[in-house]
Length: 399
Length: 80
Image 1 (tube, rainbow over the protein chains, first blue to last red):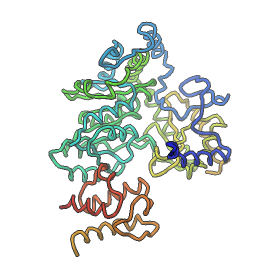
Image 2: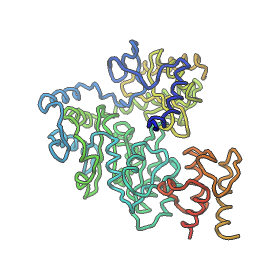
Image 3: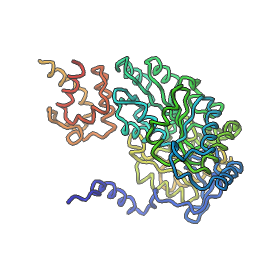
Image 4: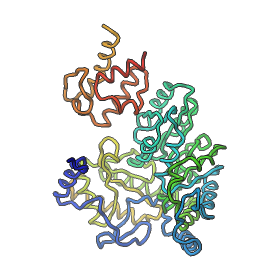
């Protein structure tokens, strides 16, 4: 008899070997309490959070919390149903209105997670005869959306405009095509050349979907993302986003100007066959989204933090994922998993939490210490962060 | 030289820079076990083949290709 778990033996072995070096399990951290968007208690120690997606620091915003509490009192703890049956409350509609206002678009559809938004839109929009053209470094939810559907999948080299254009030209001109791009690629924190990519996609008659999970709220004059910053928002057919990053809660969405968009509510399985978000969640999301529309000062401060941390880490001699700060994510490249885990632990013991990322999540088999900044990080905290990186880096012997 | 043989040699030339261990090539050579390519190498190699023959090998097709011979057959079909 075959033990179905035997396929994981290599991973179990790798993990045991790592832990035998005496490093703490980097994937079993518990935050005992959370004091603010930038500070939590971990292992009894006050820890600066530099590995959350809380870019705009909305999780403790008083208006957001108030809206959530009121919704709990007035609508209860959950909807116990699908959006298309008993799971659409006034709050869900209001949240979709907030998204339409935020993006200046005609339609918005709220999903239970960002993962499900990609799963649903991608698997539903591209049928068996259609082509999906995607960047090789696309997020797992994009690949999983492709796997759930049955379209023909074509991959092109990461952020390579010419590779995309060449492949589009080789496809049958009459075939349906969906080009899938991301504003910010979350592992290295690099941004896509959307202006050029959207132009070649439109020239080939393709529809374009851009996942702005890591840019919403922060990048672009109104925080609409990299497509706004690149001046191509009007040419993008679908923007996918999430509430679990800048918005500060959980949920996913798609916005679009397509006149037939609303039909997706009937045919999109990851929208139909799951329970809708709790009323308190959509209330906090709607409040947060409306506040993010007018958060220009916070956006400016987050850019300052990101640029300063990037420069500081470079000056200390760390190897980074991008030549300059392009987003709220700064990836420190480590030589291997053991060094990465040792550095991760050395940072944590000094009171700093970052993400340790490893393949298959990372490109080119890299081990990364991913730092993501928050608009609520103070200048003093950034100074402290750089000091911790210097001490830990020297201790572990990576700088 | 038949067209198929010509295709085989063109593909063999493309395999060369990725054949780090100098594995001897036959039609039966497998990409995963014999050449020991990981998914990243496969992506780069597929891009090279696509550009060499001016074709698209979708990820759906790639899932069916295990050996050099199967790749030759696929390329033959796509360029016919």
